[in-house]
Image (cartoon, rainbow over all chains, first blue to last red; front, top):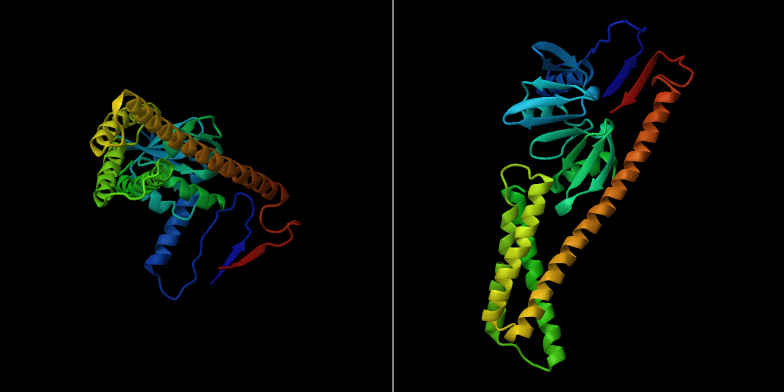
Length: 145
Length: 164
């Protein structure tokens, strides 16, 4: 299978064209993921609906069954469950960091050791989040270690 | 720590504690001049290892532990070890008298602190490796952004192709 990129002019709409003989579940999943990565995910803040590009999200967290997107300085609500967001971002730079968080590895500035084999990840905006011992392997895989 | 991870840790620790205790017993026998160990000693050490391993269950939690909760559980774990192990040790006959108690107490403390220290050291080394990879990755990403928009350096190509 080949992937062809065609350059469009600045401001022109970006389009994904899939040339195939049959629309399979895998293709639908890939297109959905690509759409989420480029187009963004639906988020709510102060009753208004936004489309957040995945690249703007620092981490995703579930607190008391409510889901949130944490960006540089803003926090948005989401209807997605943790596993749904994990599935959506599979193969990207997002990784499961604890039982309730998924972090964007691209936004990690540095990590430092914490108690009991855990790590504290400092994000580009200065925020500190925990990475559990059992999920460190995912971060290492993304980093190519 | 979730139950699956905890059970994995529990089994790994059990084998480790049993092996280390038997090794320590072997060297103790060599040093004291004993030539043989009773068969039931093996069973006693198996039970002793189980007692030494049980306090790890304090780390079980449905929710993610905060740093404060983790620290509290580390302290509780240490206290439980210092209560359970000397008791089990006395029944097995590992120590007798006040001097023996303090020696045993100190040994448990040193071993526990060493494991804590080694774990922290290992985590520090891992963190160092991750940080090196993070810096390399950031540099590469910045370089890519500076160089082009992905369609070649001179921007003449309007089409780019990739095999997957």
